[in-house]
Image (tube, rainbow over all chains, first blue to last red; front, side):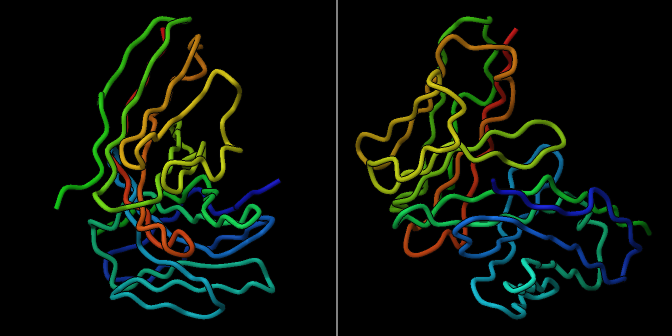
Length: 113
Length: 115
């Protein structure tokens, strides 16, 4: 089967750095994406890693290690508005079609003043 | 430009009834995805379209669920003989469709409640 594991909750203070880890078991693994979802809202795309290494987008960075089936999302200079749920999602290939995305159950980040 | 839209935003139906949920993707996006999300969980993959064809329907839970995208744009998710366990937020997403699913744009979802 396909599964992703991430911590259920993380708490940090404003201005700090937080890392959200994700381990996956996915057949036909293609890449790892990260999404943010505020309460009552739709998921919004943050980052994608198709290759090993670090991808940086402003205050957010994401890392992938295929050999370890592991990735993480790094959030720097935390702001109160970063309080949300964060999902890792593994994309996988079925036959010749790359498109299926399997999501983890999400990590609820609470940023405190 | 316009994002992904879904109608209705809320749907309450009785057990055993038939429902249709509609998704309008971003114009020009060839890939379209359906997910459902229950409280406290991540989106659960249902089906993925590339153009008009279902490229991967392995997430549809049973034969009560069916989705179409006849002209490669709007998609309809159809649920027959609804059950209380079908209650969830049904999310639609679209992407440009080139290469892996780098960035999926999600709609606001349809909250389905089966009583």
